Length: 328
Image (cartoon, rainbow, N blue to C red; front, side):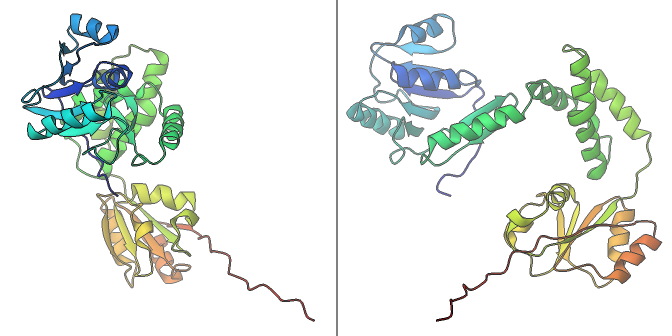
C-alpha cells in the first residue's frame, strides 16, 4: 500500500488550486462539496470559476501563484496543465507547508484524490494508486447502485441522535438499535414520507429498545477448510462481520480473521463449551472457526444450556491432481 487512505478534516481550512482550465474545474467541482475555504490562482480563469467567485463559493486571484500564496493551506492542487508551471507552483506550495497534488502526475504528488461515492455524510473512497482509473470508476458505479440516495438523510439523523443512543449499553444492544434504524425503520419511514421526521423515528426505536430485556447471545461453529477467504461461505462472512467474540485455532489464516469486526474480541478455541456459553449468556454473539466439524460434546453442552448453536459447513478446496500420462 503506497498510499494510506485517510479522510482529512477541511472545515474552515484553506485549499489552494493553481490553474483556471478544465483540470482546475474538475477538481473544484469536487472541492466545493467540502467546507474548505477555496482559493484559486489563475491569470485567465474559465467563466465557471469567475461565476463561482462572484457567488462566494471560492476566492479567485487573477494572477499566477507566488511565494507565500499557500501559507496555512492544508492541501494544494497544481492544475496548470503545463508541466513546467505545475512544477513551479508545487515547489512554492511545498515551501509554504501544504500537501501537494499535481493533476495527472502520480509520481510527483504527495497525495492522490480517489474516486468518491457521495452520500453525505457517508462517503466511500476508491483508489487504485493511479494504476487503473477505469477500474475505480467501474467500482464507483457499482457502489452507487448499491447505496440508496436516502442513506445521507439517515446518517445525518443518526449523527444528531448519537448522544441519546448512549442510553443503551455498549456492544450488541447498541448495534442492534442502529441496524434496525438503518435497514428497517428509517428506510420504511422515508418510503412512506420523504420528509419524515427521522428524529421521531429514532426516539420511538430507542424507547422500544430500552424497554426490552437483554436477549441471550448466539453461538456459531463455522468450519474453515481453506486459508483462502474467498472460499468462505457467505453465512460465515456475514457472521464474522457481526460477531463479538471470535475464537479460532492457529490454522486460521490472517486474511480470514481480517474479515471480522475490528471491535471484536479474539481468542483461542477452548477445550470445553463453558466459555462459549458464558459469553452467549452475557449477550455476545460467539463464532468458533474450526478446522473440521465441531466436537459433538460441545454442541450438546450448548443445547443443554438453551443455546442451540448454528453450524456452518466449510468449503474445501479441490485437490491438485497430477496429469495422468498416457501409457505408451
